[in-house]
Structures are given as structure tokens and as C-alpha cells.
Length: 95
Length: 254
Image (cartoon, rainbow over all chains, first blue to last red; front, side):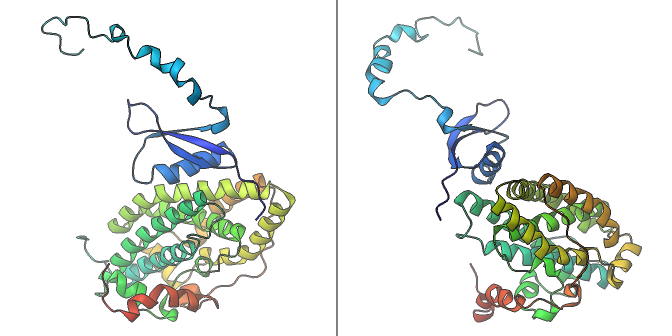
């Protein structure tokens, strides 16, 4: 078979109402409708989700591994950015 | 299953013929496992096969309970002439277009049938149909998506889809043939008269075929006989593959 491979899609599934869509994997499909159907068949056959997003893999701009140092390391020694320096008033339950 | 057995022999036979349709098409679809054009479709076809197998199990269990036969007795220990499935469900897979046309024609029929059965006077059949109708709605969606892409795709895919339609179409007529049992079931208020399902079916199928730029074939040859146990040449081979394990090792457990 010399058929060119169909485009790659990234699949995001929301496991339940109120939660976020989470990346679960990728698949091949010719267009968005088929990608959605394939995602339904591949990733939600055991009742994993209530909503699916599919995105063409080429449309995702990813951070580069070479830039890892400049992108992520500077935040490693800045603990003051974490909201751990506040005292929580007594009796606050939902924080 | 804890429910009671069918009220009479007719209802039992009716449940078994619907179960046979689901069982045999399920087996045909399972033949695609590891052979589908792409791995995504491989799993999609297996999912549909498993949906149909689930329907077959409940229908055969229910139908068999009238005469003390289990789902396995019915699936594995009957001879070719005792199966009452439509010939449409047993015709060979052919290429992917044949499989998808067969699925479109059958799933659209099953969708009309189950929607009607949801209000059956037989509570058990109504419950089975209510559960299965959602599965079948997706089978229709899946087959439609593919037929539109094959028909309205390249010249090659269009020609193959049209040829597949010509091959499968004659077998569609048997789905709407009213035989003695079907009329009796309709009189009892248990199920719809098959011929009454055809207008809505034709409407749904026509919509998909039009979008797929495919032409409806002529209604000339109308093979029948499946409901009476008369089957196509390939059916014996299908049964041999489906039944040999159970017959070679009676009572084998998973």
C-alpha cells in the first residue's frame, strides 16, 4: 500500500463534568469528524469521558527541549511565587 | 438474566431471528480484526462487533429460555438450516466499501426496528431495544461518515462504493419482507411489520447516498430465504469458524 498516512491528531478527553480536558494520546484520521469518531472508539470505550477535543498535531506549538533551561529553571528557586507565605485565617474551609 | 421467558413460541422465534442477525453480522465484522485499513478503524469495527454480540446474547438468551436452550446452545450447536438471520448479515465482507455499505443498510434498518420495539408489548424486548438503540445510532453515524467520504472521495473510491452498493442492495429487500411470523408478531403488538419500516429506512439511506453522490440501484433481484434457514454459499464456512472451538471442546470455559 502506497497510500500516504493520514494526518496525526492529538486527543483530549474530559473525564467528568467540571474537570479539565486531559491529553490522552494521538491517532490518525483523514479529517476532524473521523478523528472525533476514532477518538471516541479508541479512548472512551471504557466509559472514560463525557467530552472529547481533537487538534491537528501540526497546529500545536510546543516548547523546545533545548530551551528547557531558560524556560523552566528560573522559576525553580523562587519559592516566594508559591502562595505559601500567607497565614490562613482560622475557620476558612474552602481555600 | 432473571426475567421471565417469552409468552409464546412466536415471540421466542422472533427474538431468536433478531438475535441471529446481530450474532452473524457481529462475526462477519470480527473477521476484520487485525485486517482493517488502519488501526483506528480496526478498533471501531471491533467495537461495533461487540455491541452486536451483546445484543445477540440478550436476544438469544431470552428467545432460548422458552425452550430451555442457552445462548451457547443456539449460537454453537445449531446447523446452518436452523439459523434465521437475514442473508444481508452473512454476505462476505468484500472490500471496506462493501462492509460499510452493508453496515449502513443494516444499521439504518436496525435503528428503525429498535425504535419501534421500544414500545413493544413484550417488556423484555422493549428493554433490550431501548438499550441497543443508542449503540445502533452510533453505528449509523459511523457508517454514514465513511460512505460519504468514500462516495464523494476520489474517482476510485467512488467507483468502489457504487459497486459495493450494487452488490449489497439486493439483499436489503429481505429486511422488509413480511412473512407469517412477522405478521403474527405485529398482530400481537410485539413488533413492527417489516414492510412498514421501509419508507423511513429508505429516507435515511437516501440522504446519505445523495450526500455521497451515489446512485440508488434498481430493485430487480431480491434474494430471500434467510428467515427460513436458506443461506448463501459462504455461510457454512462462517459457521465452521464460529462453532468449531465449542464443538471440538464441548463446555470449554474461558
